[in-house]
Image (cartoon, rainbow, N blue to C red; front, side):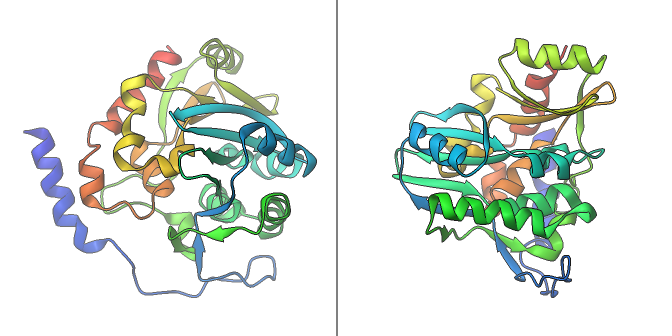
Length: 277
């Protein structure tokens, strides 16, 4: 019954979703940005080892790899500028970029650092830093092509799927302990951890198998949504809620698509709580 009521509420709210009246974005550091920004770019296929080599040659540090689907591998990467930009309270998610080596579609699928940094860094976004990261990726893997996934640049900082759904700031606290203990728990679960300062880390944690299967229902082409990011700071492990993280990562996902994975939000938090218990 609870699920039915939730679905009805979402159905009633759908009228408020979709493309809204376009608003020209402000200048970012004196640089004009496009009104619409694509969430992903694709490049010519290379295997995982070749992709890692290209990232390293471009000045990135490879954080690690993860298999979110049978024929796909997520590669996580960072560099000093990304870590510095994200080393602020509630901003650590922007420290690490994602790309997917897609063996099925024979392409490299890259999360656009401009799109995701604007969403994660909010009013502390630096267009010069994000653009430099993108240009390095373009040089290493280009020419890159836009996917159809896009959103209004100026509205990314306040992104949410629809009325009643969480914003970026509405994170789920999945663990409380000393920061050191939380980091140890992430590592014990074979999570990949990046340190930003003495009391701030970003970890990437594997969900249980059943929970992570949501990517098969809504599209393995964007499977770099996994592993799940968890910000560890001030003695708390904070995760992006699924209603936010999945919707931001799948901007073309409609109400029907979300209804198909209705159990995912609660399951994600439950899986992460087990990791940081």
